Image (tube, rainbow, N blue to C red; front, top):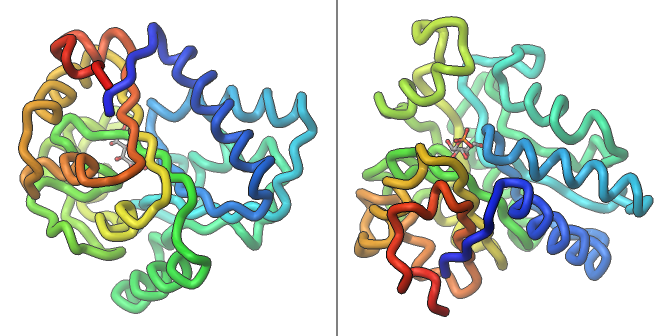
Length: 247
Ligand code: F6R
């Protein structure tokens, strides 16, 4: 389930080729999208390719994995803002079919239930992109999150707050909670691609490879997914044994 590519750009090329094939074969596909630095080359490549190929995106629905609680769409560190900057702003998606959790919702429990139902009512996610935290989180499902979790509010772990504070002027501005898709919705996706790039992901890739399927390592649940690929660049692969790549 581990696949190695030389660089983040080579990963972007591979992922975007699959992404475009999916849209061509299913123009009303439901996509699960992630944010974070890992996704930036992928979105940049997708913008370029879909513009070159004049791809019709008007029937695509997207669900983002997560959003910080307390940040509105205009906040530069919100995931709404990120998606606008890195993907949606440059392309003609139907804005009515772009879905992200609302970090400013009034009734969070109701909003989570509604977001989960929305995904379910569309038949679940066809193609889910994931990054991974240095502690093994996927979405913001931190270590210890129950495998049967659905969309929920999460207290961000200390590690995640340290890692992601790089995007904020100082750590005190980093939100302490987020809304995230649960591990159930992620596992129900028909196809999952987890991407990890850079030397700072090498240890978590080795931990994931050696880990049993356990809630302490949320990404380990993907070992039970029938169609999940873990895609790493050379730097993130540096602590993985050669057997990891034998299919
Ligand atoms: C973001 C998300 C997170 C990130 C992960 C890695 O939507 O769901 O799980 O994918 O924290 O972030 P980067 O890519 O910034 O290392």
